[in-house]
Structure formats: structure tokens, C-alpha cells
Length: 134
Ligand code: SF4
Image 1 (cartoon, rainbow, N blue to C red):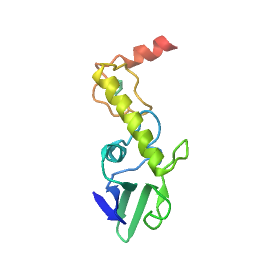
Image 2: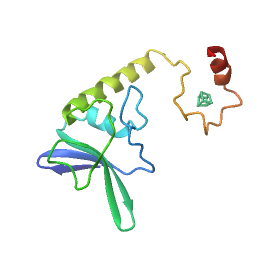
Image 3: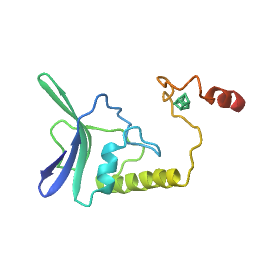
Image 4: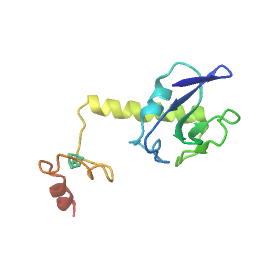
């Protein structure tokens, strides 16, 4: 969902569980909102998850100064950037991932915890690969 604030959009989505570092790095765990932000041709001033509980509303995200919803908790990013700079970084990261996918680069390199609930463990050879690595 996009909310208009002073002529600029603010992208909001509703999550289950939010990782505070889910938007950071070269393989972000939570790429949905970064993808919206990186591909939108509209001016965007911020992005946030909204956590709705009985009697409580909480925002987690990033925004330009002065535009954030009340009580916005910032997502953890390794390198502090303006929101516009972060959008450019998301565009770079997500385009690189897409380029690698298109080029067929698909090395087995699961992120920490990715295998915890996988239903393909009986078929997968990741443990052999990890043992070979030492
Ligand atoms: S167990 Fe294998 S198939 Fe499943 S997530 Fe891990 S690497 Fe991927």
C-alpha cells in the first residue's frame, strides 16, 4: 500500500515477523518493500512495515527526515544513507540478484537458517558440501 504524504508516497506493508536487518546486505531477507521502492517511478519518502496489535500500532522502516510516521523504529542498515541513497542501493542490489538469476548463477549457498524448515533435506546435498568445505 502506498500512502501519499506531501506529494510523495510512503510504502507500507503488513508483515508476520519483521527482522530489523531484513533490508540490508546483498541478499536481503525481506526484499518486497525495497523492490517496490527501487522500481517505482513515483517519488517515495519512506517505507515501513506496520505491526498491528490490539490497542497498538508500530512502524518499522526508513524515511526521509520529517516525514516518518510517529514512533517509527529504524531498520538496521550497515551503512547509514539518506532514503534516496538507500533506494539507489536497493536498486543496485536487486538488479544484481536479477542479473545473476538470469545468467543462471545459482550456487548452493543458503543463508543462515534457510535450511531449518526446508522439506527437501532428504534430497539436498548441502551437508556434503559443508563437510567438503571443512
Ligand atoms: S536444505 Fe538444501 S534445498 Fe533446502 S534450503 Fe537448504 S540448501 Fe536449499
